[in-house]
Length: 471
Image (cartoon, rainbow, N blue to C red):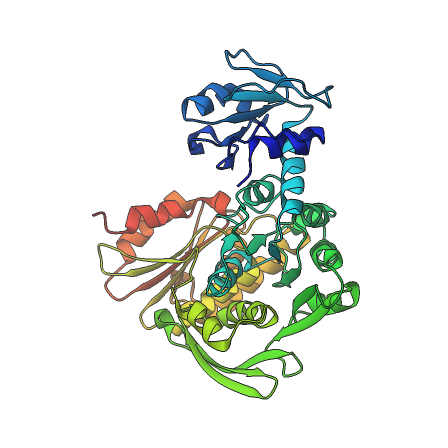
């Protein structure tokens, strides 16, 4: 377990053996403090973490990283100029540093290098979180495994996750997000991954990155950071042309997965059973294995293949891999809820991109009942905004009996559906999520299947909250 001495050594490059108090966790939100935690005070756009140091200590924090003096009764150790300390204060205490975020990152970098854990890094435009969950589930069949909680996948979240590692952990599965070039390279410098998994290169975040080519360049930083073969392994989606090309950008061993028979691991004969999961035939070397797993939608075969690939390159047996795949339904963000009218809602309201929305519509197509698609704006698509929304609109016209399009960009979805010959009376375009609620309350009936999906900023979750049965 991380100790006060480790934090001091990371920030001063000097070891203090008498500072052996354990640090149980690291957080940036004082409400999440547990006894013994490290609280990192970060200045924010709306709130300054320094205003919550006292609250963190009240909740039992041992340490607080601060980057400017605060009014406090607790000891403050100024590390901005000192590299060697004569006296170690009693805890709780504040450590005053030049930059609290950089101090967090440096502490995580130091701690990662002290541990022999093998790290799996995951990035991609769509499917990172579900892949992370399933990969961790598979690896945990044999190894003590830590995974990134929630979506802690950036320059703050990844260091926080690493500081939760202990000497007992054998594997860590870390999600790595991307907005700008150099970001994943920076995360890899902290995490030192051995295995890198790339899901795909889509259009989400193109508004910031500029294009799919730039997104691919950013994602490829993961495979570039891997150690050479045989220690490093790049697990690449052969079905995505951007990802396939990354094989030329790594010193690591390349392991392809996908639906192409040229892959090291590939699947065919894919069947969807709606909410009862999927089945497929798996090909690996000279083996053919038939599997059925509790994942939703045909697209989820790629999620399963990623987890299987990691298990194979990390020497797990087939029994361990299959047990991990079947251990629990891994559907992170898609929840199924009932309405008062007896309709079934597929709540996929956390986020949206063209790729994930098309996959959700494909799942809707597999289900029995009148199909209603409630689709909101997909944000941050940049130059792909019109194209992405039109693709979704055309597919919605093929799948849905009723389309409710939400938001300004939702109008593009509605118009594309109309051009794809969906009848006008079956298309409703509304300004925001709240406007969709009365329409659905009037329309829903028993046996309907309703997909609710849109970018997080559209707050489509309000639709689900208003319609689901209140117990």
